Image 1 (cartoon, rainbow, N blue to C red):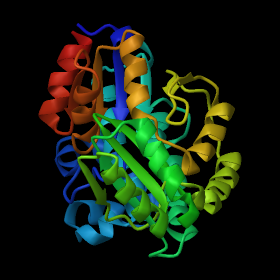
Image 2 (spheres, helix red, strand yellow):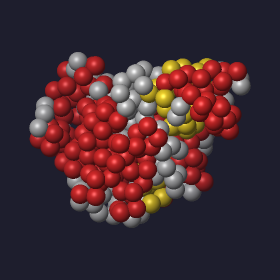
Image 3 (tube, rainbow, N blue to C red):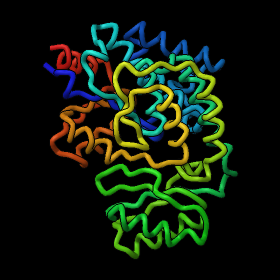
Length: 318
């Protein structure tokens, strides 16, 4: 039986979306259907129809992918709660990768489901419009130390903004900024011995200083949103340490738009503080794969399907 101190729930970020996600949950459980209905109503759009039927390029749009991924995560959470899971009693911490931080906070009661959907729509729109298409870029740098990637970014800054956006662990860092600077840093990283430097097919330079207009939009939106302290602490992206206070969390969510997602350090923090199992709640298995590469003593378990939910509840509730 899982004791609460050893369990954390994590929530996936952009890139984990796929057409059809959440459909089996909606078919199996009224609680899941209710989540998708609330999200559709909050956005005034049949987002669930895009999620289940595509087209993929419409689902992949930042303004759709962000609330859609949150909806799948929350559908799974609501089903688990309906079947006896009390988050505050059974889970020690929550964390989410970028937009997943909002899913984590919705699960922990900081924001209502409808407000979380609206916040993520604002966030997606603001991130999309912060930088004209084609001016920004992101690249994945594989097999190079954090310090070397940092140095490559510094050396490329004469060409524009360039910084580490995500430290995903397992030798995977993502850089973000002005297209020319990111291309230059990627080339420098290869010279420094990176296994690979891959330009990513993204529509905007997320988690870079170029996202400042989006950070301003989120500051206004979060100021207005009703928020409560989370029932379990959030291990925040930009801090890689737990946060308990709703107002402080809101400030960190603003910082996160232009700041680094410190996912490797987040998982390392979990490992150092007694967490042995990370459940990834929602779509895909990206975070589960990363957890394994960051610390072999942590087991990652992805919860996507009704069968996954059954297995997880059996383990957690005993």
